[in-house]
Length: 191
Image (tube, rainbow, N blue to C red; front, side, top):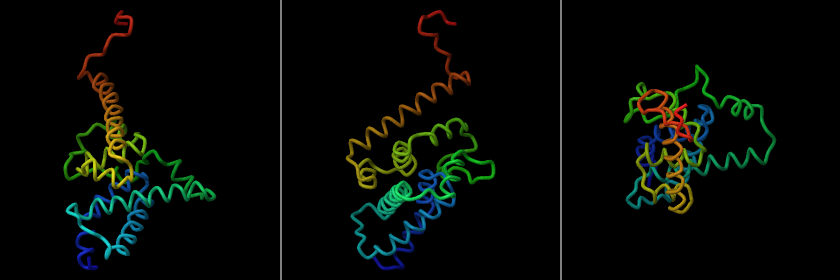
């Protein structure tokens, strides 16, 4: 693939790659750095990219995934930077921070309950990543498995676990808002 073709295809996927980077690291500056690193690596390897009918998006996500986990491994090996401490301390979204990287094109997040957004953000990164690749990006299990470098069964179990966690939280939310009646306690006393 030549540079011009790469630029066209890569720019079409820039928003999706940034959304995923934000969901992985939850910090706008770090997400931007990851996207930059992803695109630099992709540009260097563009000549060796083979389409294989799936397009460039899964390939970019694979590079992003590897860059994210390489960064984590590097941070765990080396001394902790002050910025790293601030990033972990500010994992909860600040009022002036960028909104979460939701797929705004397909969902009206103005009408999505903040508790649902929080439930998704609180998922373990392995579950959140699979859920977003499948649910937001519309990728198939096989593509997700290739991106993450895990067997398809692992993708399926992580997605199942993510759905289960969200389902439990949604039941609680539905009961809190009165959509579902509260279930009586274990002993059946109703109190």
